Amino acid sequence: MTDYRPPLDDIRFVLDEVTDYGRLAGLDTFSHADLDTVSGVLEEAGRFMAEVVAPTNVDGDRQGATRNDDGTVGLPASFADAYGRYVEAGWGAVAFPPSYGGGGFPWAVGIALQEMLTSANMAFSLCPLLTQGAIDALLHHGTEAQRELYLPRMTTGEWSGTMNLTEPEAGSDVGALTTRAERRDDGSYRITGQKIYITFGEHDLTPQIVHLVLARLPDAPPGTRGISLFVVPKFLLDEDGEPGERNDVTCVSIEHKLGIHGSPTCVLSFGDGGEGAVGYLVGEENQGMRCMFTMMNNARLSVGLSGLAIGERAFRQAAEFAQERQQGRAVGAPAGTSSPIIDHADVRRMLMTMKAQVEGLRCLIYANAAAIDLAANHPDPAVRERNDELAAIYTPVSKAFGTDLGVEVASTAMQVHGGMGYVEETGVAQYYRDIRIAPIYEGTNGIQAADLVGRKLALRGGAAVKELLAEIAGLDTDLAAAGDDLAAIRAGLADAVEALGSATDWMLAHGAEDPNAALAGSAPYLRMFGLTLCGSMLARSALAASKRLGDGRGDASFNRAKIVTARFHATRLLPEVRALASAATSGASDLFALTPEQL
Image (cartoon, rainbow, N blue to C red; front, side):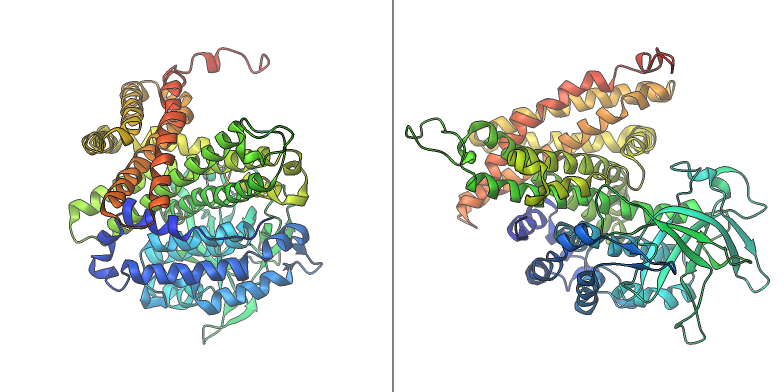
């Protein structure tokens, strides 16, 4: 496994040229976070992730998490040391409000830091990831007393957080959960039930774990309308707000998994001791799903980012291996010699595919984060509303397309390694094992596709998505003015936008009258959307790189590579958009034509 080297130049380029970071830095909220300041933060963070976190990756995979007889869970010693230094350095706090000890930077910067953390060690990164989501839920829905009690130490990472949704019989059908909450006269609740697949539900990195738990009150209406959200701390807080008596929350077991071995996936039982675990209502009774979606949307973007982060790591290792590995004689090489496999055309195809996928995905994920920033902080209500729409549209695509690509890139990286990729010695197999959970996390990718066609296309009767497609089509003028160098990008993007627009019209026309027809094509439609979004953002990258070349700004080799990568994406990957159109618009008849027995 190669050492991790943060792609700082690529990150800065995307922030500056694709997300238009200057627009964020120009807001009063972020006036202290100009691009020069951010560049310094990123450089120091990259050094920390490479030197402190990345060396824990192999330990986490080989040693994993261990459940002890008393229900506690131990992690590799390297995790505890790295996590302590992570908290001390304040990296988890950078993008959270200063009022609770955060740095007040945009979420776009937080996402860049999270990319480097996740590339360094995905399993390790999941502890801060879940804590971030819990912080968001309490920020938006908690009482002031709850925020004051929990957020200062969650923001720093001194305390961690979890989200507890899934149950043995409920799965993704959250409305079927059976965990119960009973009211008490003192305003608290008693929680009883069992939750499964709880990431970092028990561990030894922090002295307190703040569980956010979905449960149902005795008189609650059925389904998701009757779910409430509760904060259930591992240790009850004393009068000074310090962890005291142990709450009735027990780790029954941890899962043995394909990957992310250093991340404990726990089965948690609430109330085994008798009366139930003590919990406190977050928000209003029976409004838990609204609260939890705040947390889940944060997590969905972060999970999509894991596809980028692991894809980046796998691609870089494959590129380095391809330069070192000698095998066969490349076309034009002297007779009797052996060539590095990077000289073979098909290996170049795989490497360029990975490069284009990773760079396009970085643009999408960062643009998603920037839209969240603008939706929350821009002074103009119209700008806030539009960016709220964009964030809503981008999020299911970022999560599903991002994690699908993460798996594809990790698999391709194994292929570049050949037989050495299938054995554990090189470490590339770990990337595939680790990222394979991501398409399942936080609502499977099928659920994300259903969300895109069922909810997000419906925004303003379809106008929100059509305006986005019109904005992408508007790039044609700039691409035409750029000349022959970007002509292939212009042609590929125009064809993709036309095909996606036609599929969008079909979805809007058929979805309401026959929901199964839209759902049957939702997965290929989401992929069309993801490819087109990434293609449009790589086109922006190429335009920016072309202008930089003309102005003599930046490294010329770096800028030329951006143009070539965008052109490769447009000519080799974007054609898939039109190829997927039939699958997206064929309806559901053949899906249901066979009986279950015939299947």
